[in-house]
Length: 266
Image (cartoon, rainbow, N blue to C red; front, side):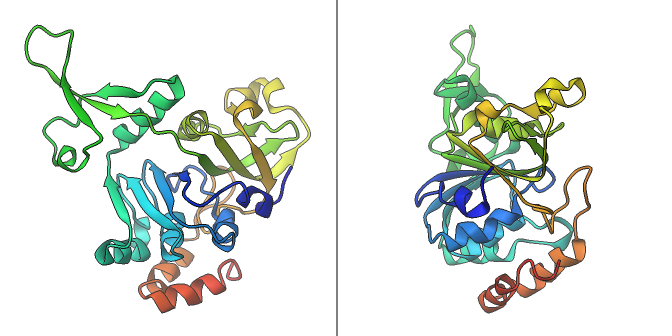
């Protein structure tokens, strides 16, 4: 088992970072260590959307680009730092769709350079993604366009789970997007609410929802590591705290003041 600073040291400037959707186990505990690491120019891939964690990293100036289908704080409204950065032109946004991001991760998992998908045909998204190619289905007798999505191969995936065992296996339950992130990424960093003694893969109840240690680089134990987001089966999201952030982060000064005390309000 490692600590947060040890995990953060595995993230370098210029890396491609995969982060999960807000309900799937966001490691909010890793935000400060990443910022304090002094890295920059991260290319964030949201799987498939982003929220508070992405907004904080953007606000701290460590993000160069974001590939996502959406960025928001849910009931708390828009993502203020992200919206500000887009208006100022200080980050590059690669518009995507949820299926396209999952398709790219699946291509990486299978070790192929791309995978086809059809749902993008006729959408404006294709106009702004020069890296997505439209070809004719080579197996069709008539014209049949299909889009090729390049493999998404993150350098690092980061997420939070309810438990891990001392062998490095982590329990993700039904959150299969976390497995997709780990399969596609070179390095997977996990924070966990608790570390259990039993082998999660040896128990029929937990085995089917367990990501094997083969795909996990390092684990750190952090109680309430997803706060102010919730974690399935553990605790609910702190909506009032999310709304407080949304109010304070409307300005750069307010964001800095909030981040200076982040975690103390819990």
